[in-house]
Length: 242
Image (cartoon, rainbow, N blue to C red; front, side):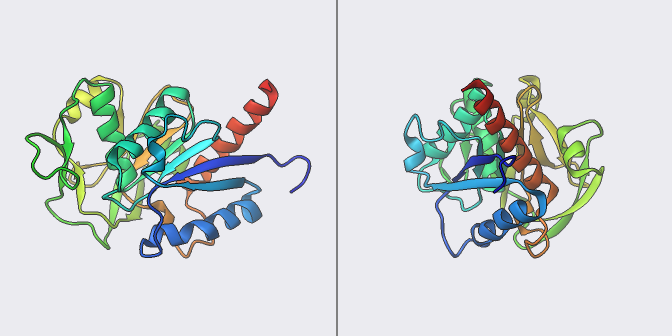
């Protein structure tokens, strides 16, 4: 690391497992970010149960909630997302992280504390996240991105083809989330939500697709590079303040 390189601390939130392909991709992605883009991330895994602690992600420069649901602790994942959202820590949620970012926003911002994730609470009366009509496990599909959005600036296009490994997605209450400020900036060709972002936040992006599965991992997806840039910017700001 040179004197001009700032290392950023990133919290990888999820229940780490060698059986989850996206988890196994992370080390190579971090290496590629450092060698190709000079974006150095000092990564720490935080299990969902450990994320229940109020200060679990305090002091980090970015939070990435990775796939692997159902998480051992829904409450821990939601707590980490809320901390990132409320304190301006750059945030990325992919697949299960996307689903839980919407769930946290619905409960904490939109006044819908009862809405549930069907995978976590199949007996609930009102779902925000429920089984997709057509499972996307192992699929690739087009995503149409709104012009002028953070997602469009990050990806650099208004159409992309992305890889999925999920069977759940958002269904009801989406108009309420929009009315409270969440922007749905990417959809599939049938209009189903695939990307969410939070205007006014330094960097808050969530994708139902898994950018960590893009290619062979040697060239990080633009979404992951953007998170790394936001994390380094956060770390530099913290250095100046201290």
